[in-house]
Length: 187
Image (cartoon, rainbow, N blue to C red; front, side, top):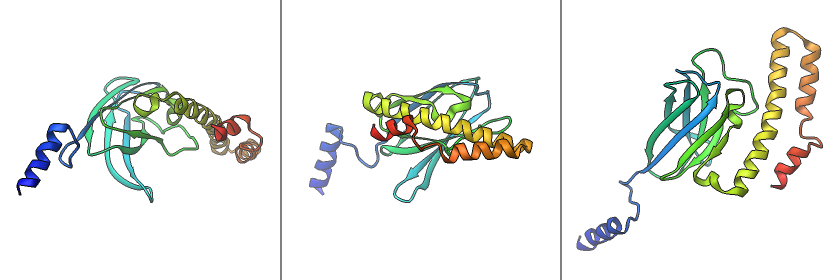
């Protein structure tokens, strides 16, 4: 019993994380085109198997800007989903924006509503220049592919089968000889 109490005292004195401690973090952003009342849902992803864990929501109090302070037991992997107060989220080739949040991180989002799942992340692990470059290229390539998907959806909605077929073929061939996709693979 004395050894356990001594070990706990040493862990607490040295700042060694224990199960009872939580990591604080902040998520904030400036996303052009978001409206007051829009919701950003952050779902924890548990690997392997891509299972859902805890979630937290950020409901925008003013257009384009948000901030959330939270706590978690340990570093977490999240996917952010956009749920607009009016209309639908823009079509894209992703189901959300994936990210890692660690203790004491302040993750910042920068971008636009039309490309919300390709927005730039800053802070935490995303401050690493090599990772930032890799993600910028990957997001740029994804946004271009997402724009094709949006054109495909618009053509289908308007009944323009010729434009839909053309956009579908372009979407399916997107990675063939694509210099941006090749660069993303190299990085």
